[in-house]
Amino acid sequence: MKFETHVKEIIYRTYNVTSFRFSRPSKLDYLPGQFFFITIKGSGKELKKHFSFSSSPLEQNYIEFTKKLSNSDFSGILKKLVIDDWARIEAPFGKFTFIGENKKIALLAGGIGITPFRSICKYCTDKHLKTKITLIYGNRTEEDIVFREDFEKMQKQNKNLNCVFMINEGNDNWKGLTGFINAEMIKKEIPDYKNTIFFLCGPPGMVKALEGIINQLGILANQIRVEYFTGYI
Ligand SMILES: Cc1cc2nc3c(=O)[nH]c(=O)nc-3n(C[C@H](O)[C@H](O)[C@H](O)COP(=O)(O)OP(=O)(O)OC[C@H]3O[C@@H](n4cnc5c(N)ncnc54)[C@H](O)[C@@H]3O)c2cc1C
Image (tube, rainbow, N blue to C red; front, side, top):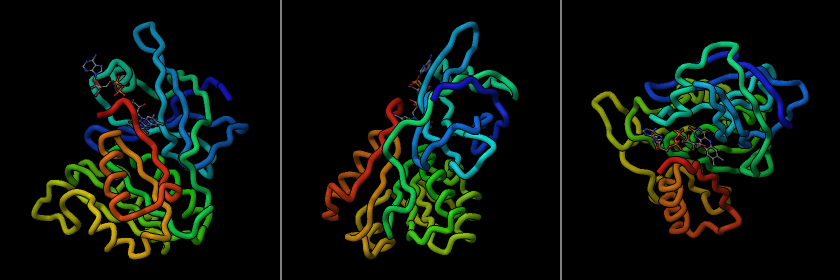
């Protein structure tokens, strides 16, 4: 469906990632992991892009997307948005979804590719689904981890959710994993990887690298779902 809406809330997630929330029409239904097109206005022109829902469909009062802000014209308009500003949305789209179809899933994200997984994890947690979820989330530095508190909170509420944060550049205080997501750590974190459905999301370069690793592990093509965030390298 296509509808006009307004900015309800703006949430700064990290130094360069921001979430934008919009009023949700009661008729809008979507699945965790799907995406939508949004048109915004600035300097007299309309610009349109697509983003995954970072909200879960069970969050009734708003829909949210979360963007890594860049130097693009679109990001320039986003940086100036204020509460009640206008937007047009077309939704929902996409098949990169999960509503409890499998017993074990692995969610592998790089950078801003975390957004559909925030939606999926929130949905599974709020629905009390029994699916065993391992989220492996890679970032350059600790400061780049988006939704960290959110995932830590969900982990406490959902004993079936295990979140593994990995950063490329460690620091003295970092107690988690350092380096890049690789086959060995996947085997360690997901011992039953052969019976797990893998979801991969992030900038295309990162997803391609993750696909290579998953292939090395002998995971079958029908066990792999991918979403490329085109627009990033
Ligand atoms: C299914 C799907 C879901 C997606 N979900 C998300 C999501 O949840 N979150 C998200 O952040 N992205 C998501 N994306 C990607 C998103 O659609 C955009 O392509 C992406 O955010 C890049 O947009 P941009 O406006 O930053 O840069 P673009 O306009 O696409 O430009 C690409 C790069 O060029 C640079 N650039 C562009 N214009 C200028 C300029 N005038 N001056 C200097 N530099 C410039 C920018 O810095 C940017 O890094 C998704 C993509 C797909 C396909």
